[in-house]
Length: 426
Image (tube, rainbow, N blue to C red; front, side, top):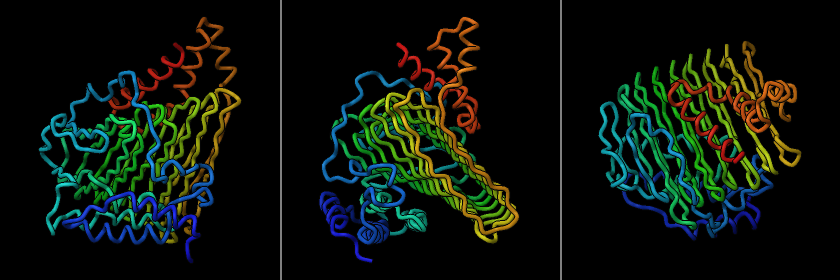
């Protein structure tokens, strides 16, 4: 079916403003992505999975200005022994980064990988392409076509320390497009950390291929810039007895859309995706998750909590698809919001689509105000109202934060949440 003229014009204008990188093994996947982008068109509010979130600022040609955060970004992960890889407005900063050598993995830059033959050739854009069915994700296709840099990470063993991708925002008109590919061999294991606002507008795709018995841990904290805009995608494929666990904390930002698309293709695989967000004022945050069970005895969990006030908006769209041969599936999904005033709103669209008959799947979504009984209990014992509200907020977010396996990383996330709450009370 032909695209409406308005959508075609929007797409062609955006394409014309970008330069298609050429040279080397990525040329084919980029050309394919560009073709797919033109067929589906960039998203508009009329698209089903964008009806709660206006994509205009993510698709327009001119980058919306975002003032660089004036205060010092609170350090995170600094107490963790990690390998640091730094990007500033989407440009790799070699001077600020560590040596990229680490036993059990190899790390290369997408921008400098020009050989005709490379292991990433079979993965770059492949999982993103799979993730376009049954829902179009045109911003991801745009990323695959036009990404200017990113990391190609091949994990061959159990990596001794996390790899930390640090994204700095330095220009109020920066428009960054990064694409990471992570391949874990059978039995391999790694932890990937991400933090920082990245750019005024940020489009990021990460494709993660988790082979049999491999384990991938992912924790990210999206930075404190008040005016930044971001569209991120994670596409993951899991082999037999493998595990994928991802947690995201989002604080501030005018517009954040986090998509996660996971395929469980091997028996006995586990996929956990969790998120906590705290938003104030002109804040719009959208988590859109699609998990497909296509193997026997697999487990998935979606745990998302949002704390909103002063007119902030939170969105959750989560789906579990269980194919007919995916017997003994265990799928769990919960999305909840805590509205600290009457001006904020939470929009939820939980979905189950099940074709197998031996499954245990559930989903739930709730939205409400602070627990008045809990607040009264704390205040009656001398806890000031602001501090009591913060304690109940932290307790509300705890189920999502508990999805982080590493206690030290969970402590870092809790410290970031507590810092945000403290600043809002001061």
